[in-house]
Amino acid sequence: MAVKQLKKQLIASILSVAVAFVALASSTYAWYVSNNTVDATTSTIAAKTDNFVLQVAKLTEGAQHGTNQSLVASSIGHKISPSSTNDLKDWYASLTWGQDGLVHSYMQADVNETGEYTRDKTGTYTIDPARYAFIKSEYVIYTVTQTGTCDVYLAAEDGVPAVQVTATGTATSDIIPKSLRVGITMQDLDGTIPSGDEELVLVYAPYDETGKGNDGTGIDGWTYVADTANVAPVTYAHVYGENYIWTDSSKAQHNYAAQKNGAVYTAPTSNATTLASDVDYDGKIMRVYIWIEGTDEQCVNNSSEEDQSTFQVTVSLAGVAK
Picture 1 (cartoon, one colour):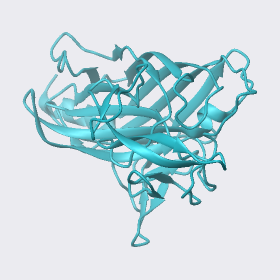
Picture 2 (cartoon, one colour):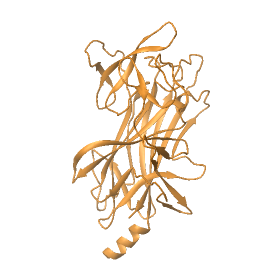
Picture 3 (tube, one colour):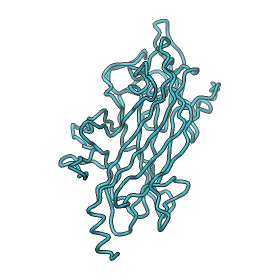
Picture 4 (spheres, one colour):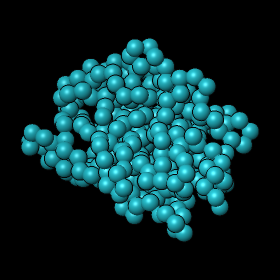
């Protein structure tokens, strides 16, 4: 096919990516109670496009160019328990509770690449038994041809959230999906070598956060543990449910969702903000983090619950060719 024809095909194509995480959930947990966890067993990311423009592969395997087209990549998850972060770098766990039943102090813990707490940064507390702060999956997303680029957004469709949390089996509680956070990061690639810093571009929650959790310094709204004694409002970009517009501290709005018009997606008509811009043949690194936010108003002691459902979290992205 001629270069001109390939470029025309790319411009006409719509790209979509879906990320799915399957978690076996026990809902009898409180803010950082170590014997209550979410078991994440698998994670899958799939690129779906009629014209095979967008490709996806495990980061460890690299872009599968040529005849080795890659439309699906998968990785294995692990257990997670409630945690708190504002940047995916510093993670906190609760340390002490008061007679009022609220958390009054926290410990900042070292976390390895798999999300496992190893030891708190003061060297005082050992994390035993093993506890994990998050699930992380790493992928490379790239175009199948060298004739164009695309911008990537959340894929919005009427009545279908861009991020879906569904339970298999009979769910007896909505505590876990209501306190989940899904973080998306991007990093450039120079050939096959990561380039520049990993950037947290967006955090998604299935529900808006308007109340406060069971923290002594708890405040209403989206919060995180800021230090060993205090909770503070988050500073990262965040959206929820079917609301894909974030208003920053300067009151500027950012729309992260492409809109579906018939069979195709188009970029937002106003305040468009990409998850990744100019994705090309070399591609970009995309990482997806899932954690249970301990300061969420839903992340409280629910010992009466006996929910053993499996929850699947699916993140859908749309790439709009340029």
